[in-house]
Structures are given as structure tokens and as C-alpha cells.
Length: 91
Image (cartoon, rainbow, N blue to C red; front, side, top):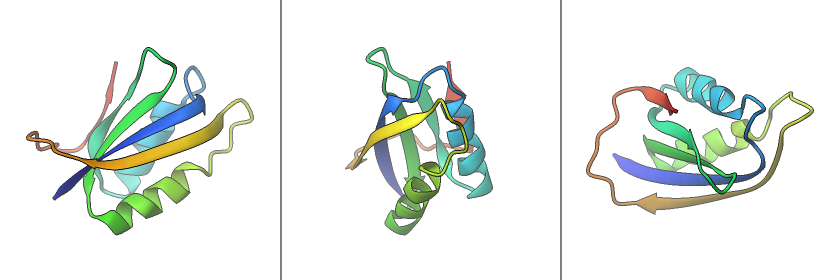
């Protein structure tokens, strides 16, 4: 299983974005975690195959919240020794 890190920037903190990311990951049966970063970005780690990451990103952009605004999503494969069992919001 591959691990991907998504860095999401824009108006994504304080608007329920982590919960949206969590709910979507659960619906798609993806493992990983989501957390806010001190620089205003949100970091997502996903363990899945490349096709599901692409699908997740497309669905993540569809968010019916007028206060949220995704400006950019950077995605890269990373080396990760941890194995996620489920999906968590990290506080």
C-alpha cells in the first residue's frame, strides 16, 4: 500500500474542512489522517492506490460550504513506516 501526503491551502481551517475530509475518507474506505498545520494549511495522509487518491482529490474539492476555499492541493507519494487502520482527525 502506498502513502500519499496532500497539502491543502486556502481557507481550510475553522470551516469544518477536516471533518469533511474525514467523512469522505470513511465513505471511500480510505486509511490515514488529517490535521491542521501551523502555517494555515491542512495535511492529509492517505494509504491507498493512485487511482483512489485522484478520485478522493476530485471529490474533496466539492464541498458545499460558502466559507471554505481550496486554493491548491499538492500531492506526493511519501515513505511511511506507519500503517493506518482507519481514518483519524488529529487535533
